[in-house]
Image 1 (tube, rainbow over the protein chains, first blue to last red):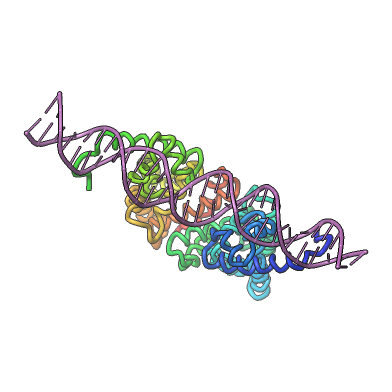
Image 2: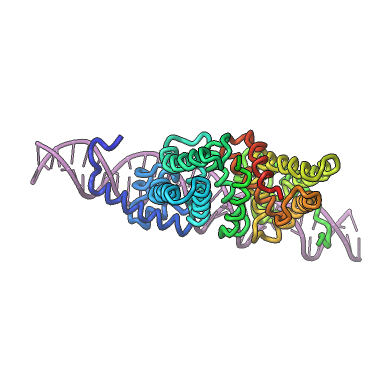
Length: 188
Length: 188
DNA sequence: GACTAAACGGAGACAGTCCCCGCTTACCGT
DNA sequence: ACGGTAAGCGGGGACTGTCTCCGTTTAGTC
């Protein structure tokens, strides 16, 4: 899985610089930031960028793993201090807010919960799906969540909810309201 | 509002040919079909296309008015034969199915229900919003729908729902299930 | 210090958007 | 019928973005 031979020093340097710049660029220009431009800003040729990250998805993924892991960690924090149902709700809220506010994250989360998502992207979504599964299972056990719903469906619904809220004002002010509608519908 | 002077014969011909081709192209290649290619297929220069339809939105809109009006008409058909609550649900189902299955329609419906949508696009969404308002008001009067929800919010939620279902399988098999979740949450 | 494979980088092919402006033509008035 | 004119045409070309190819550079090794 890991590199047999460690990365050459210049390669590693470029890789990291590219990542730094990508995070910035996606944050300020959204998921469609120009890749050649990112390469230029990082001071490397576009060939180098495409070698390290063959697709936009790959770069997006690499740029946001940290944040995704942060979200997953939040799930356990909520689970530790709230009853399962409330923890799930709070976490979904967090997820939706991030989806809307962190430019570029939406595309990534979207493909992470897509039916036929590629293995590459799946690797990235695994953390988030794990977190969701834990919360969903707990809420089901507690009896505050329908038992006929899958964790990934909850994630998809949250994604849809974020989309709806985005249409409303682009700021996410509606998330809480819409989320309460959803939890209402998700009761057993 | 209408043309002071009627369109010149050649202009009208091109306009209509362009529209025909656009409907086809969007249907088979989605909302991102190449505009220059549409112009070529219609046998006109790209300048002509951009004169008649200054933006992709404008063309999309013109290409789908018929279908949008069809959807609005469906609303009244349902209203005539079903109780308000059921009529709303059925219509939302119809709307979601169309959103997913008719390639290119999603982008249009999306911007038609966006907060800061331009006047151009608004003109197009007006039919759909009218239909939604009638159904929503009736359902509220009947007492099967929360009174604190706006028609446009219902449309946004439906759009989000379609998005969620699209993530699942891309065919819309999940729509009914998700829709029942939503109506559950929308009860008073 | 020399060798080699890994890595670089940027030129260039390609695709898409959109504008500009010289040319054509439909629609008048006579 | 026919000429004048403005509405309309169209495609060349500037620009932006993606992605590949391959000659050149350089880190790591002995």
